[in-house]
Length: 459
Image (cartoon, rainbow, N blue to C red):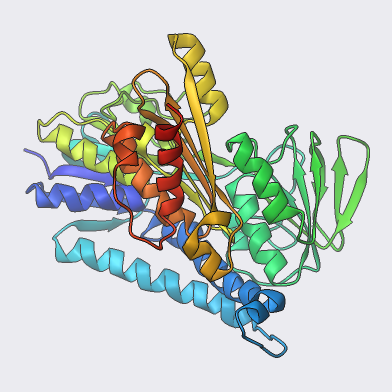
């Protein structure tokens, strides 16, 4: 009756995960992709930026001569090749894109190149041909948001899409936005010798982060580096060229060599044929879904950035798997409270669950009290041995039933450490239970162990 059991529009991380799980469940599956296989994450996001950050991290490490001398190591003058660093990122992308494409083909997923559009209930149109499917998943993702007044030329004024190519190293670069994208690029650029001006429209830097983490990040990741900051100031107008002209809302005019626009992302939901099934995105362009990722239109689902639920590649992956489970009649939802997020600066940031202000708001609304405890990397044996003792772990929990509400870490390998806390939240473990878990010594994980034990000892 149908050409396929499942058609997925968009071959990013979410679409890929859904396709693999669908094939494992025996569903005849096709995936439609208009651009590169792997979507934003593989081609223009997480993967190339992590490759650049890996190189930047090595440069930063080898430049820290005082730190190396403390370990008994001396190095000569450091040299790096920008083109080779960029090539490392490109090569990493190609390798992972090929692996992703091969995994789909090996499992018998049909890959259809072209722009997919909904053409009615259980219908998808690609390259003027209509395919039918029992179920359809929209996984079209997002693109960088460019605020009004900012003109992008892709060379002197650009978004993260162009930034990851590292075509050149501007001597002085303005970064608009102090979220994770702005933070990661400031880490890359300063390691490679660029000066930064960071412009944040809100009153504090890193407004999406827990306040304690934002404060420490400013002290560790911004103040010691060649970064000047503006807060509570809008970049009203940005004109590309040499120099780039930036008009700020406080009346100042900046002239810089380049400008990276890191002001968030917007969903790719336009021109998808949604009107053919009576579906309209919300005012911000997101396709609204319920906790099963259903759109309200029979047999039509949406996952990933286009839903705006949680704009992270691994969240999209979890959502894709959940949809396939629901299609197969096994009710599944995604627990967003236990999905961790990471920032791959040096040192890293990892967090899961609620920030302290969010937890406080929830406590006031629901009538309970929160507890907060912090531990430091300064007393951690492994961190001391590494000579990398900057950082904290912060644990937020309910005083009544002792369950975790949020954990925030800034420090060495925070992106790996946060998963213990994510699993704890997913399994609704109490801080008391966690305090009795055994952590290997000497490891960085003891930073969390110490935080849990502080709670136990304070009651």
